[in-house]
Image (tube, rainbow, N blue to C red; front, side, top):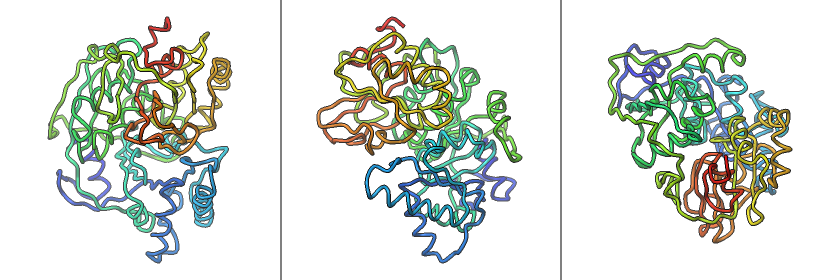
Length: 418
């Protein structure tokens, strides 16, 4: 069996499972946020169950519209908070919370071998830790909160093999954008993307989180990495409960195997209005911009901020550009403060926000007007994703985003002398 199949088999009490099979799976963690939790709570109450199956395994994080941007978002957050406190769930209030997919791994709430479901499509982020993690609708989440189980069809696994040495300024964001550009936004529909190869083994955990996060942008059910020493080092100081590491068998049956030589991959930019509409930075041309966003569950971790700081150090944000930097969690914010990054960003002319999803989904803290263009380290650039349907979002890594903020157009870090 593949890595994903082994995890799912262990959680449904079977020795062997195959793609296409319908199974009932016990879950290790159920997640929702201030947008999706209220719907799940209403459905949970409609079922008539009084208590969740295990309060230690149900997590609620206010991160999309908080600190509350208006009365409607305040009501959403209030409903979630009251339910979480009444049920004694794992809950993080503003001030100690972060963007959910940055926060949960940091807190050791997700571990290798887990099955995690969340009422958020980017729940697949946790596959970086060797967990099977997937997004589901709020009604499925309500059922899982009540029973501790979900039913699902076993997905096939596509194996992606990345070999070679990364070029300068190329990161996990570029590998996943290049991959999506190659296979399309439906290239892995309902499949598990298994990321392997010697280039992956040298990739940082932050870059792995980025790649797993965007598996959904290829239509995947999940994205997953094998557990190696990097993973174990990350988990070691965070884990507060036992976990089990699974590996794909050498004779695993994959629906497809796709190979890439990463030495041929440049930093990538996804043009509007699909994450698959990618171009190498050398073929972008002159595209003037109005805004830059560095952050999100895709690229709001410390490594991302450090990369942006390397480009912005000693430089100023272009006077016609808004540059918004959003640490992914309180811990990332504190680390950035200790390392002097926040001071550097502010002196460069950027604004630094409290952790929030904010502009990624057009929520607040950077909504675009008609005709405006934004370079963003987020994961989606659909029509109207960040505001006006007449605006444009270009996806890129933090180095390109920072260089673009300086020059007022999409640019690589070499163009600012980095």
